[in-house]
Image 1 (cartoon, protein in one colour):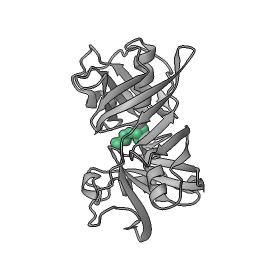
Image 2 (cartoon, helix red, strand yellow):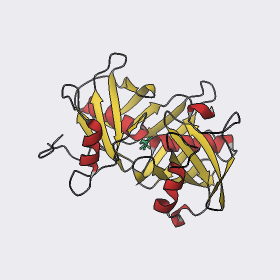
Image 3 (cartoon, rainbow, N blue to C red):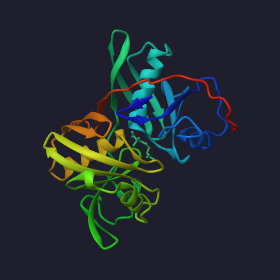
Image 4 (cartoon, rainbow, N blue to C red):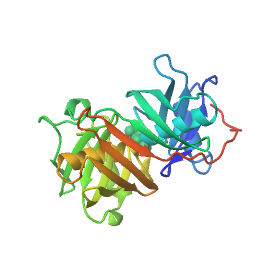
Length: 275
Ligand code: ZDR
């Protein structure tokens, strides 16, 4: 399934047990010897919510949260008849998220996820920074001065505002942020071009996966960083390489809401995988 081109292999693990999901993520994500994906997502039973999700990047590392995958899990459980609810809760490593499914002709046409409040406290993101919020932080990399805005949406993000994102060499630039020592758990990095107060476009270098076509939590981090630096309104459309997401940061409850598509591409059976 994919959300705005961010593609994962989803395993119905309601009954099935996967002994080493991290190794399986590496094997299946391989675009030549596996299926090809940005990572692996397990859909599991939960004792505290309607369902539980675990998400592994293509390098095998487990992420706390994945916005695009949470929408796809909502589509999967509804369309496979695992639930009839259109408002449901999903347990993640970053807490329980609320999903609201939009149904058209019996199918899930879009999903709105309550991502909860953004985390701005540096030690919780985590980022090594001695101020209250790591917003507009100067960062010198290879003699170039960047300004990063650090936010956690359950997983760590560094947001940079720049011009002409198409010209950036992400495979060269991305790892310099992902692996920078100020990010003890590495980071996802978003490069953003502002189009108006309600519209921005971004590219993402994902921790553990490289450049992907979209990043749900990243789009949320971009909106929050845009609001905190006076560049975006609290409701905006964020264009990613694989599609667009609507993001809203509610001033009353401080929650960030992400709305977008979820697409099921094919189903299959894995042969020849040694776990
Ligand atoms: C960015 C992401 N694809 C999403 O949609 O939120 C999440 C993937 C996990 C990310 N690479 C991480 O935090 O390690």
